[in-house]
Image (cartoon, rainbow, N blue to C red; front, side, top):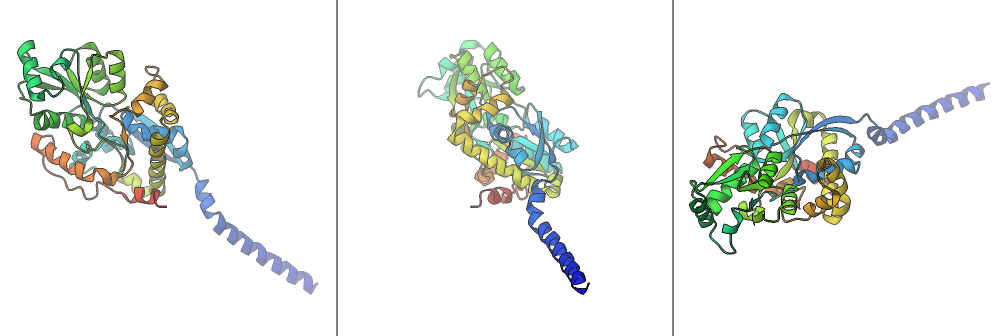
Length: 348
């Protein structure tokens, strides 16, 4: 009887120890099996956002414990309104509007980049012939106006956006065009592409896949300036996270960034495979996988996940925005870029 009691006591102790040990061992596994974190992602439908589409299509966001939903926007400034109202948690668009957002008290943090030097300038059939090899670009605009009797109409996105800022920088600082010879017209991304194809505008600052699409449909539309020419190291699409979401879900944000890093690696190593989820997100029956694959390997597609790579260029772009009046004053970038998630994701 005494032996039985001792055995029972020992058995209970072993069971208790095993349970505690099991809890300790199961900790990480339990975290992995925890309920997925809902994340509302706002995105602009361009190739620069490809890493987030690839991360989702490959199942890496789900693997990171996230349950994403996507909302498409026409421009970064429009998305800022959604961020301010609390209707999205993650912003995937140009970095420039985020500086403006911070001046308005919106706590958003750049946790990853996705692409740089995305914006290029194209000229339509009427304007393109003036840009002969080696021709002075300011003179090309002047000659167009002299012949056509009007300034060249150039489409881009709203003031404060990366496309608008980049176009103005190229026109006035690089090409040094006379403002009487070029008229900047703000419109949405789809409208810009349609306007170029319809001949409603003479030129535009566009990104992929629009560049590939318009040139395939009308070879008379010419690439005049690459992203590096328009704004060296031009900061492009980034992944910005609303501060409250980041503070509440640090592990989810780290998982998000890790998925983006993996996606950038795939885009560089196997664009044909990466094209499938990108086409599913961007194609909408308008393009095919072959077109998207071509866009992923064009001069306007340079992918990087490292947010540190664009800090200096962002400072320069912000300074230029102040000079043209789309930003009231320089905004300190401390707190805007938060590279710790990227550093953790790439730590070997």
